Length: 383
Ligand SMILES: NC(=O)c1ccc[n+]([C@@H]2O[C@H](COP(=O)([O-])OP(=O)(O)OC[C@H]3O[C@@H](n4cnc5c(N)ncnc54)[C@H](O)[C@@H]3O)[C@@H](O)[C@H]2O)c1
Image (tube, rainbow, N blue to C red; front, side, top):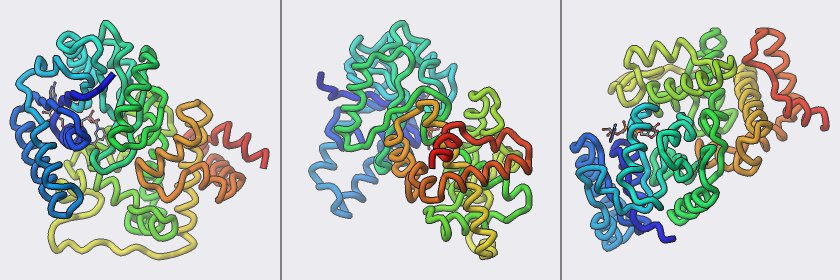
């Protein structure tokens, strides 16, 4: 089957990016949003982006013109009736998404794949709103969708195997790297990367180091492109906090994923980061940024603590079959740009060193948060 006509519902940050990607990849695209001005703004943004890409000679003028001509603005869900695939990128709310999928199933042709770009809601849960949940799947892009190479493909419990295979083929034909994830909270990246934020905040809350020092340690000593606090400010503390909270709730309040009061307060205050001008750091013009205390011994301890938590989470995901080892490594290097995969990193650090760091934390704090994964312990014992 040829998946030529794609519907994108929701024209915000993610929807607009996916529209651009699908159109540039040669698909006919229908875009729709409950708020018409969001669709118009997205269309203008896409035209501007493509013009910039033409200027930079990344795309020909003809390709840009044809891509724009392939985009149609829909007036209602009925405009999706001829689509082969519809991708939903609306507000992250289960009841709103379920309502939408129920309506989409009524208007779309029976062969149409219904996909959700949700970051943290269960695909099975969304699909349960449909009479035929077999054609519902998670296709999780990263922001910005046209640029980030990774897409997580998440079949729900009822998803047909052919739908999964077709979804993978479509997304790969758009020149993306796909990984397959089990329908569990946070899928791969939003689960495995949680300690990068959570443990960094914990270290700050305990007064061990300030934001700038933790960011410096992770970048200078760990090779990460951005430190955890810079990254949270970049993602937005609203988005990042909500993902943490959802993952924690969905894991039945497992202490490993517990959100922090520090980030909750930033969220409540509207200090969401770069987009609001204030987050962990201040972004107003002329603001002086805090200096890191470049104490290498302390920096190495911070790095080892956060890395050990990350490696542990990767082993836990592997233990529970969330993804293959290869997909885990791909997801973390392509989805959040870590300098290397966490399983490989664990090997390089020495699994027994990682285990000792976790065991020491566990002994000190006596908190479930620091319990080592059984698979990590088993693998380390075989070394
Ligand atoms: N922002 C990210 O970094 C990111 C990354 C990956 C996945 N996601 C997921 O993608 C989805 C969209 O996120 P976003 O950041 O683009 O949100 P956004 O707020 O930028 O855009 C959402 C759009 O959906 C529209 N909308 C809301 N309810 C609607 C409805 N019932 N019908 C039609 N349109 C409706 C809104 O008007 C808005 O324009 C969410 O599920 C989110 O979890 C976000």
